[in-house]
Length: 188
Image (tube, rainbow, N blue to C red):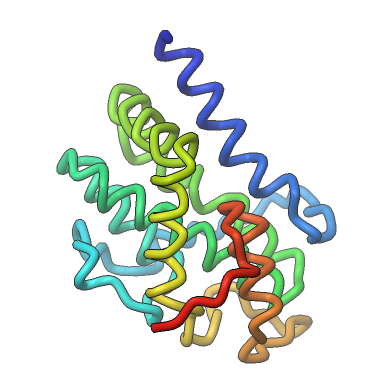
């Protein structure tokens, strides 16, 4: 399979998570917000350093560092967690700004790596997401890290609600973004 086909498959997988969202459509805005530039880059975070206090902008910054270091396994985990957390935040805050943040942060992150790095990363994502066992393992990793405990201040505005969120929204984020099975009891 050529690189172009792999990229297409990876993008379909990623966009499918966003497209199956129960969220309202997002208006395109000429926003100058760059979410990733508002946080310090933590470097490539290994699994042992990842926890549910890290916001999506921080996780995406870490993902970029992992890609640049060719640590694709940790990069894929950070990608999955950042996307799931931003999806969850869009559900619990329920504003256009939150939905826009979910849809724009990945693109913002990918602008900071070159095309070869993007292609290599999409292949790694495709391998994990297209293999049922690997996807299930990735879902377990995200579930073990758990629902975020931070306040989503990066997307709050006067119109939003910043509730702690409940397990139904968390399960919707896991299922809607990564297509993780959420009807299985997860005992830690």
